[in-house]
Structure formats: structure tokens, C-alpha cells
Length: 149
Length: 263
Image (cartoon, rainbow over all chains, first blue to last red; front, side):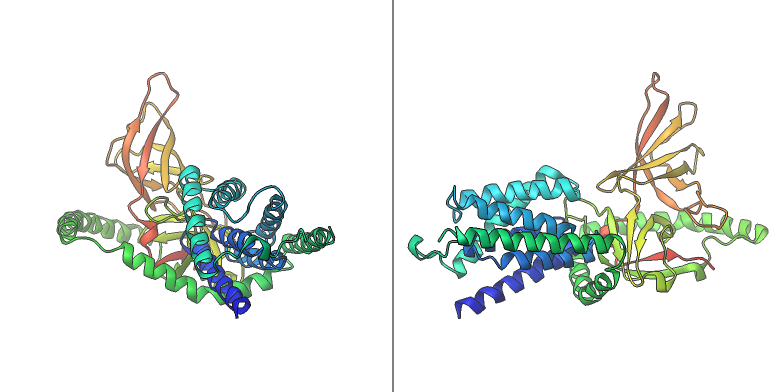
């Protein structure tokens, strides 16, 4: 039940993020959704989701198809690597990774107002994190499904 | 350790697959897939965009009254100008741009837009090569220059707006006929640069395109309205003077635009 709800929520959030990012808002919403789901669930399938959502985003924005996917993959791998060093499921980690990821995204793909957009992205990342952990309360540390095992 | 190796393996496979797709995309082998994606999302994008534009377009009654007064004044002036134009065109048999060359196109996306903060630098239209829209075509709205088509596939096109950082074209003022280069500064900002000091730039003067068409008639047509001068920067020690130009059209509130596709 939780598994199917997880996929359903991801699908809805990604659909909204892709539509908004390709239409009306210059924020890396897809990156933020992928980041939050990686932090909360730490599942390997997020890589494949990152690839295909990147393809869709590039197609809609007339970019080279795959350019966003490459960025998402590398960024998500960094998040997995940091699991060994930091507690991922914390507001500070979300804050830092949202900021760093958004900043890199804007540098690579362009932005109008870099600082303002980065700050908005961080805020959006925190809001998304709050929504996801509200729907899926964080389990105890022992129950976490970690790729360290 | 095994789990970590699995993660790396998955990552390497995904990266290789993505690189393959990037290579195909650069050779235009993945255009069909891109178009199918655009078709799938176009109705949703249109709904979101038009809903946002409708919300942003709401103004207070006092704003509407003031706006009404200004519009009436402008209509009066325009009527006088229209009478002169009619007389001149009848005399010289010129139509510009002729109505049958304009193709209406709906805006389905503004990927570089940020409501209330940044103006759009790019637009995505629902017309493509099959409709006669190719790279280099000019996009207008009521004689206002909006931008040029940068890329197009069979059914969709990407427009680089006049205020985009990479845009530049020759332009002149209507009152003083000062010639310069209109350059986009990003975020919808435009300047009229490279105007010699001997020319006169006046605040409130209208800037129009000078025309950069090639032998085939493709390119920016002359006489399209770029905007109005809001301030002038003139330093005696500099070679040129510069003016800030504000567009008369709020691109973010446009539901559709027109592409000049030719006769």
C-alpha cells in the first residue's frame, strides 16, 4: 500500500514539476522532486526516473535530449555517496543540496536572476520535503533501507 | 559493499544509456520522440499557461479607469497617424505586414519565465515546419516585434524574444531617426546601443526595427515597434550613447502571437 502510494505521489509531483518547469516557472522543480525522493526513500530506481524525467524536460524545452538526465544522474549519485557521511533525512541536508543543486543547474542551463531563483529553489525544496515526510513519516534509523547493508 | 557496487553498476548503465541518447539527439535521430512528448504535454501546458495569464491579467477598477483614459488618448493620436499612413500607402501601394502573411500561434510554454520576477526570454509555440514556421521567421503582435524563431520541428517552435541576452538587431527612433543597435539584456530588458553622439535620443520616443532582411526577404522586417525609450545615457567622452527601451507589450500576458511566414 505504502509502496504504491509512494509511486503515485512521485508520479503526481513529477507531472506537476515537469509541466510547471517547462511552461511557466524557471525553477529546477524536477531536480527538487528527485532529490527529495532520493533523500526520503534512498531507492536505486530513482536513477531511472531521473533519466526519463530529464528526457521529457529536454524535449519540452528544445534542449539536447539527455542533457538534463546526465545532470540528474550525477547529482543523485552525489546524494547517495553523501549518505555515508551525513544524515540525509534532515532539513539542513535538504537545504544544502537544494541550494547546491539549483545553483549548478542554473549555471549550466541558464537563469535570469541567479540568487533569487536559487533561494526560491531552496524554499521549494524545503516545502516538498515537508510534504513528503508528512505523507510518509520517517521510520526509525534501524528500519531504514540503506544501501550500506 | 555488494549493494554499493550495485548502485555504481546501475549508475554506469544509466549514464551510458543517457550518453547514447544525447548522441542520437545531437544527430536529430530522437526528434520523433521529442515531438510526441510535446504533443502529449501541449494541452496541459496551454491550460496552465492560460490560467496563469488570466490570473496575472486581473487589475483593480482604478487601474482600469486610468488605463482607459490613456488608451483613448492613444487612439486619437493613432487615428491621425492611420489617416496619414492610408494616404501614403495608397500612393506607394505598400502593405506592411500584409495580413495573409501572418500565422497565429498559441504560446504553450515560457520556460525562462518567473511570474512577477523575470520576464520570459523564450517562448514555445504550437506551430512548426509543417505550418511554414522555420528558423529565422519573425514573430509579431500587433506590429510589435516579439522575437525570432530559433529552432522548429514539425509541430512546435522555440522563439528567442527580443529582450533575450543573445539578441541584437538594427533599430531606429521614429521622431529623430537615430540609428542604433537594439540589444537584449535578459529579463525582458532592451537597450538601443551604438548611437552616435551627434544623433538625438529623446525619452518617450518610439524605437522601431530598421530591417535586416536578406535577398530572400527573410529576417527582421523594417518598421516593427520595439518599444519606447525610458532613459538616455550620454557621456561626452564616450563614442556612443545608449538608451533603455521598454517594450509596449507584456509578453507574459499574451495568449497568442503571429508568425510572419511570407506570401
